[in-house]
Image 1 (cartoon, rainbow, N blue to C red):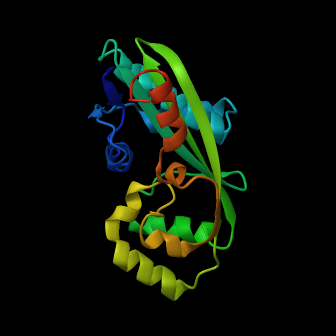
Image 2 (image 1 turned 180 degrees about the horizontal axis):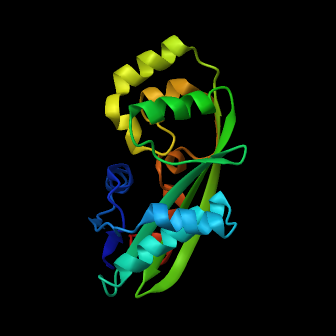
Length: 198
């Protein structure tokens, strides 16, 4: 079987694959993601295009270090009414993000790219609409207190697989995609290309 490499330090992406029985080696790309985002924004790129570009750049950087391997790169962007949100740098920014998203629908764009030997074999962008409920300030205080700094590990400051589920009234799209990886289409690709048992 072909070696699978995840071009990411994301514990969530690695766990999704491992829980699905997929053995991957994790090798983060270590890109200047903020610099790439700013450059692409300045060129007029959309949030979708940024996610796709970052997923490909991550896969490409790591592909060069692992000849013959299938290298999986992924990225997420979040936009709400034209405003882009990044991973919060601290708890205060996480609170600000959640207050700005409260009572609104935002779009989470999750892109994945698979490369081998510097060639794109497959890519997908799987958008999800997230409807955040109009929760109270008391709820937000409780949520942040319960979750702690882990909320700074995700682009929206929430983890749908845990207490973050209480932030939403609706999610229109794939659950795995919200967690960071369009898992089912990726598994289909890997099976179709001999990297997993069919």
